Amino acid sequence: MKEAAKKINKSEKQTRRIKNRYISQWAKWLIHKARWKPSNNKWDNKKYQTAIQIVKDNYYDYWPTLASEKLSEKHNIFIPTSTLRLKMINAWIWKNKSRKKEDKQFTARPRKEAYWEMIQYDWSYHLWFEGRDWTTYQCLLVAVDDATWKVTAKFALNEWLIETMKFWKEYIIENWKPQSIYLDKFATYKVNYPNATDDKELPTQFNRACISLWTKLIFANTPQAKWRVERMNKTLQDRLVKELREENISNIDEANKFLKNVFLPKFNKKYMVVARSNYNLHLELREDEKLNLDQIFSKHISRKIANDFTFYY
Figure 1 (cartoon, rainbow, N blue to C red):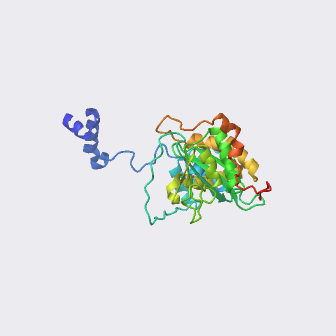
Figure 2 (cartoon, rainbow, N blue to C red; figure 1 turned 135 degrees about the vertical axis):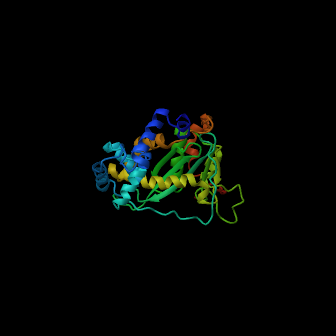
Figure 3 (tube, helix red, strand yellow; figure 1 turned 90 degrees about the vertical axis):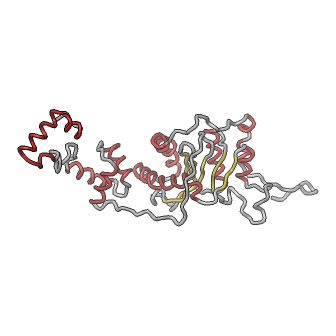
């Protein structure tokens, strides 16, 4: 009996019980008693029906992950995302989406080690207010820290020079200067004329402002290169749109207040990761830079003074 207990990793007393059951009832007693029985932790179907009905009424276009979070936050119903996904599929609320294989396979670059060592920057046009205002598409400017995934965002009229300078001026006042900014080759950030691409004396207005602040601009050759901010745009297009709908926000001013005071603090607290290094590589503004910040983030245009002390503009 001792040898048999060691073989099946049971106590000697339990092994004796199994032996007696086998003698009296034969092989069916070797099967665990809980087999083919529902789990003790299984939910009642009425609870699932209640949760699915709430999703149908309020969160019909939510992804399962976000729907699970909303059920937990607002209705005190805790359902794992995987379970809710299956229930939504059975209720014809959600449909599995097959992933499209890319022609080129890219390897994700490791995160930077230090806090604010590099900021990925991009913009996204989308129906953020779902047509509740007079415009159709709005522009969201997004900056993501490469080391910690901390998000800074702001609604703007467009992604052109003036709005971009306003965004980074507010960012630098609040967070100081980053070491580098990773962005695309849009004309606001980079001179794209064929005859001037190699001329370092012809920076764009935004590039000139960054050079004066000792911030380096890094230009991505493909969208996959700055995939962290591209992926963040997709996440915000799903989550932020629904949050704005719940708050019934339909203009840029209210949306920016909601972003700064409610959405981004909650989002960053939940999804930020810890940097591999404890160093913060933000550069503090010098006194002369603080005084001249408005002048730095403004258009600088060169003109020649004529003999009569006039110039054309």
